Image 1 (tube, rainbow, N blue to C red):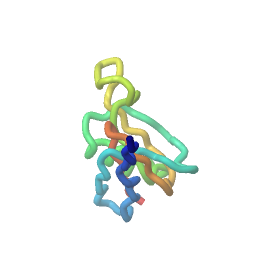
Image 2 (image 1 turned 45 degrees about the horizontal axis):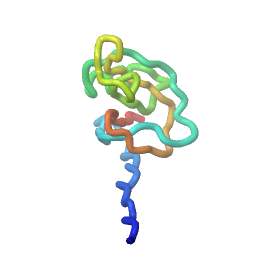
Image 3 (image 1 turned 30 degrees about the vertical axis):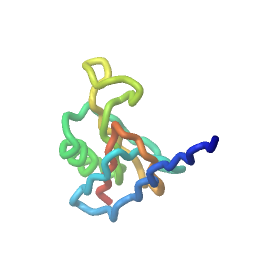
Image 4 (image 1 turned 180 degrees about the horizontal axis):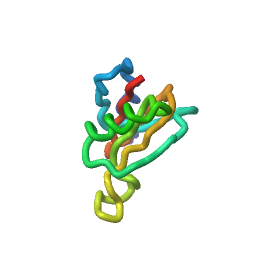
Length: 101
């Protein structure tokens, strides 16, 4: 009997940050830094990008359900987490990462 080796998907890499708000799907802040400066309900990734661009302290953001362990609902809305710089990402199926500066 041989155990199968588990192969995990690679961790996502942060994109080059600019005004285009490139989306990195299935990603969340995974490293030191990336202090949250604000969070707001946000219906879309594009809306979250706009919120981050409007906040001078925000250079990166994560968009997705407030609590990733529960399905999206009125009690667990889609949320825009506005962050300072982010150096590392981690794979989280329910969230997407973007950056503006």
